Length: 179
Image (cartoon, rainbow, N blue to C red; front, side, top):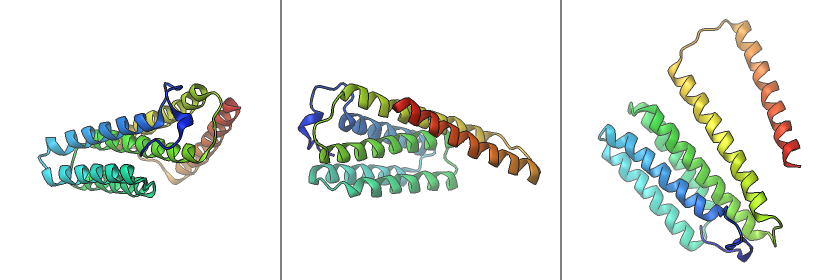
């Protein structure tokens, strides 16, 4: 993830390149806490290898590697569930890996774009959406992992329909707010 677009320069306080690296560091820290508390050191070495892969990709401008690195982070998190690592650390690590991947992808898209008007407004809106989505995802994941609720099939169908309606309403609301 190198800065390839001069229009992303110091005009903005929301720099996707810098925020991507910060989120990658946070993902590594949270995976490290989870695996370190269980003393599963080989998984921590795998996380560090993913970081090195990400760094090499940034130096060489291999943007496709960030997607591979995110998939590897997802596999590392899934393996942690099977190895009985505390789910909270894995969820946080995966959320920050998702943030890093999204911001790296944003950096790539912006490197292909020309001049962008209203840098701060654009980045603030994108980052706000990202934080809200990630925060809700973490809250829902922690709730889902810590509560065991039993529902009949009829209630599950109703909850599924309400979920679809709620998500479509939220998407429409976000799209309306961005315009």
